[in-house]
Amino acid sequence: MVKGGHRLLFLVGLSLWLCLVSPATSELQRLQHPTKPDGDGTLSFLVVGDWGREGSYNQSEVASQMGVIAEKLDIDFVISTGDNFYENGLTGEDDPEFLESFTDIYTAPSLQKPWYNVLGNHDYRGDVEAQLSPALRKKDSRWICFRSSILNAEIVEFFFVDTTPFVDKYFTDPGEHKYDWKGVEPRDEYLSNLLKDVDSALKESSAKWKIVVGHHTIKSAGHHGVTVELVEHLLPILEANHIDLYVNGHDHCLEHITSTDSEIQFITSGGGSKAWRGDIRSWKPEEMKFYYDGQGFLSVSMTGDQADLVFYDVFGQVLHEWSISKQLHDAA
Ligand SMILES: *[C@@H]1O[C@H](CO)[C@@H](O)[C@H](O)[C@H]1NC(C)=O
Image (cartoon, rainbow, N blue to C red; front, side, top):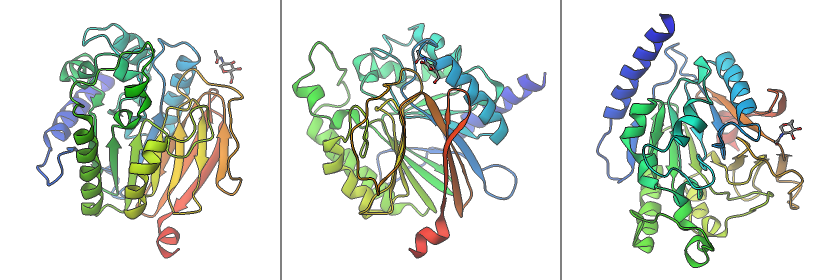
């Protein structure tokens, strides 16, 4: 009864947020999510990436520990950094993979919250429009996925950026893979509009914290390493607008890198299922704060003044934790 009631409230709330789409100078989809109703303006969420494998490769184990931590932190939502469905995204709105890799896996009551998803390169190998379709929300009301969007959560604004179309090799050297570029072409126009929109949305933002989420890495010592196209085109915009965090997946690891050039911290949370053990390159030691080559996820609890971040492994054990203080950060 109680659970049903919560679910109903959640559904009503979700439809309200989704309706709060306000026109703005930027073309990006705008969403809102309130902070906790405790009066302190706090917010907590989990970040997981590279996950949909019908529970295999420890996806189910990670999911169950996410449920435990989500309950402890009373999370507001989950962020997925993409590669939602392996190997080739969804075949369509009715692909059973959606239920088998999402609905039937993240079953904990504490995870019955909105999931804000971006798309990864594997998602682009399937029917992209299916993942963006409101039909999925009818199957599982948690599912929220746009190519790029802005989520205003009062103390923090999230900028979800569609990074796959930036990567040259998917266009020039796709190998046996087929990518669904409908809605992306002409590519140059798509990318330049997206960069312009992200830049102007960041400039307009008055949120205390600015977090950018994309699938591909900017700084990473993992298997894929640095995404040169993002370093060239997106990073200068993020630096010019003094964002706090860039959060990605793509490398199947957990990673925390700081920057000697800016205040931005780079976080990889791509440990949702299959991990690439031992696959690590060298990185400037003064920037590399943490690297874990197994599965796991991230939690973030924040107020206007402070963000507490924690990486967990497949057993829910804390691997690495740190805090960022907004006051110190601003004074620095
Ligand atoms: C699952 O996680 C455990 C603990 O980290 C690890 O020993 C095991 O190899 C993982 N299994 C797979 C299939 O990755």
